[in-house]
Image (cartoon, rainbow, N blue to C red; front, side, top):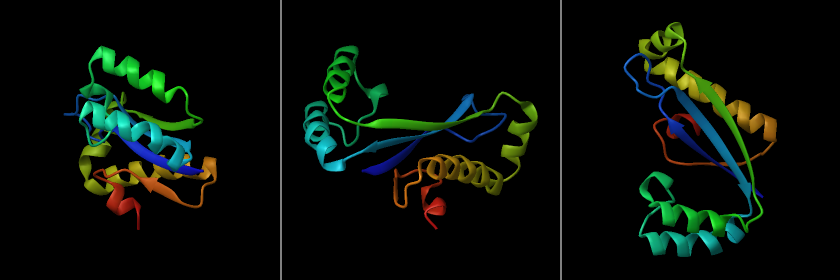
Length: 129
């Protein structure tokens, strides 16, 4: 089993329109999932499965196919509803990176995986160190 991690939202503060930053992990057998996922990506002509790029019918089809797979999901969420937190995030890139590291490490340590596959993101290069 592998742990694949992806992020949603951003770590922008006051000027960001996003209220949350989410780090989600999918625990699965990569080979099993790829047999279902690769044909879907080809059918939808996408490099990765992004539900915001799918029509309602495509979302239904994707969910029906994904529901047949054996996987687990875990996540860690930062709520950015506090003005002081937003200001702190805006002060420096280091603050944003620290917030990302805390969320990622919380998720990884709770699940106990020795190796993690991070999706490309603003923070993945720094987090991989």
